[in-house]
View 1 (cartoon, rainbow, N blue to C red):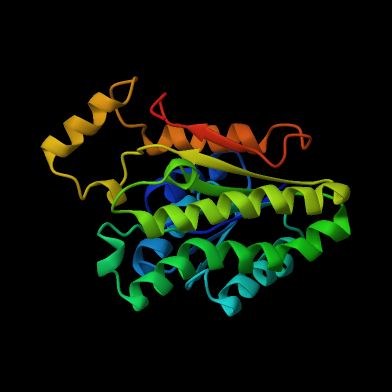
View 2: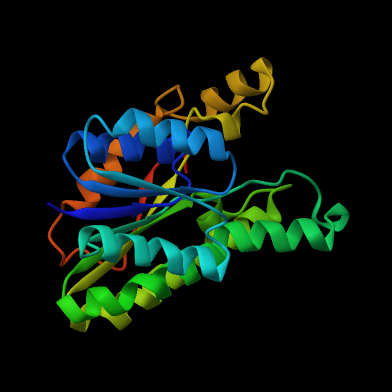
Length: 240
């Protein structure tokens, strides 16, 4: 039975991903630094489907990332997949963003990818097997006004994905990212109904994707042959 570590798994895309992999019979280590109660509620819910461990803490913290890898090794003996989904957004002018807001966003969106990847790589290299999937955004490819910091963090994730894929390919480890458009999650419920309608009109499919659709695409990517690596795979309904 395969084992996956999923960050940001208490809500939204991360929750849908965890639920799908649990249904597929994967052992799971799920993480969140946002809502401890929601994380453990998710673990209890999914425990009827698979073996699961919950680890609360900011994945952008070195100790938390190390603990995730340690739990996977101690409980299940291996790490087959890391899905870096932890992320937050920030909407506003860059000139009005505080240093604290910048560092919090970068710690959650970018540092978490560095620390968790660094934590799982030794085990994967030792086994010459493993996959890493980073959850990114179309704004990391094209940028968004009033989301400059968020765009920067996701652009960095994309660059890290491509470089790390080249670094780990000789060890038969694949690294990819999914560049999502608008997914109908809590993060995107900051928009008014009018703003939502306007945004939907810009998307050729005429709607937002559901978290379940997003999770299914992630599953298909991670089930693809390991030769698929270093790719930023866009899932946006034809928007960009």
